[in-house]
Length: 143
Length: 399
Image (cartoon, rainbow over all chains, first blue to last red; front, side, top):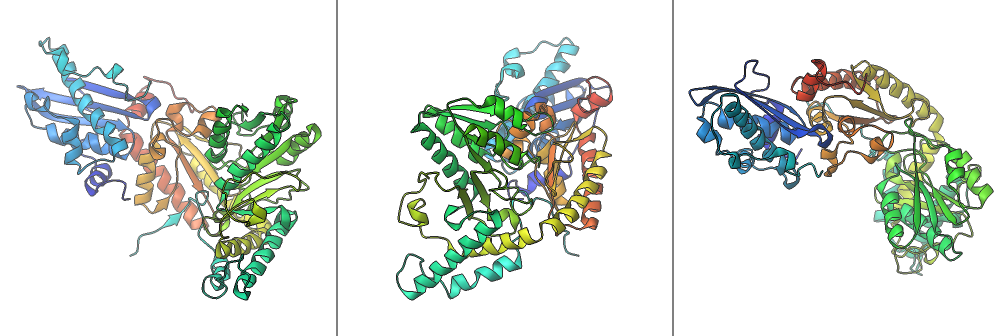
């Protein structure tokens, strides 16, 4: 299908890092089933390094591909680097997304940030709340 | 090895029959005159057009002068509704009754009329996707000018009690239009017997060409032009007639009508096999009534997955299908049809429509059952929604 780039189709057909981490250090879930997409990211963190990452996604082809690409982009990276991941970087790494699918890359960025926030909260680490999106008020779902 | 290709999207469009193609060819290369031209080349085309009009009228049970050729079902729906509405308005009647799950060609035309001051009542279609004649009767008021109810739904295939609704309208003196785009060529239609005042059809749903359709309007109903122009179609639809397409449509329609019973029994047997096979997938549900249903329509919701990813994976395995998910429509909301029969948003997103034709084989149906079952499992295994359902963190909607 010409709707998506080859890269999107590759990550959709063969998603990387699908699954669950049972003793995850941080978990982030964003989206809403009513809107048709939910992403959940699991992180394993050691010495500020993301040593493992898994995802589960309910959603369209680009949502699955965006999750897969986002996990690849942060795996093995320090938290500080993962915090810099933007939706734009996810979309570019996928060789672009159709305009009406860009919100999928936004969800991927937000799911990772939410998982990192969860890691900070669990470990009582101080962090700058302004750096994290407020998923409930993002308006992606048009509610 | 060539890629397997199984076309199960016949409700979207069909492959043209060789009968239709062969019928069209001479009207592109030989009899290519403009039917409005006075010379013999034009008059030969005009004769072919008149002959096609008579044959289409015979298939529907009406007179040739009640047939208007259009660019397709959408144009016919637009013109039928606008004509009936303006006809009503001249008599002070500005109320229109329709249903919540009509095609957008109908719903968007009604929206436009609402802005012009018409009042529209959209009837509930119930969980089985069927509106009752009693619902229609109860909604009719003294100022009602039109009832428009589709013959069969394009997404879930449910067949409406058209003859009975037509009777209710006739008894109350209200015009009755039906969008029969999905029904013509697949179900027996006789506009006189079934009390239909206006009907829309599109050729490409029964192996005819795209871009051509028909508006039937009973004698005495004044049509309002949607396209202004020349004197074609008794002045009611400007533009040089698409003669090749009209000839192709006529051939396809005659073919389809001649074989309705044979095709319907063959296709509905395959449909029921497919429904039976897909019903075995846990937490799946058939959308729309199982009995009052187009011979070729299968529509399911699968809990915990999203329809677009389902379509993409099926396409990878050679199956062309359709879904009512928001992602496939480019809007935020899933199919208005599935919402109208009461499916919650999250369930409507996980819908799949497979529409068969008489060319579909039993082997293809078997392959589709196995492939859909596999793909649904693959997607559920990566779905956080499914995990929560299985772990009891949330409750299944589809038991």
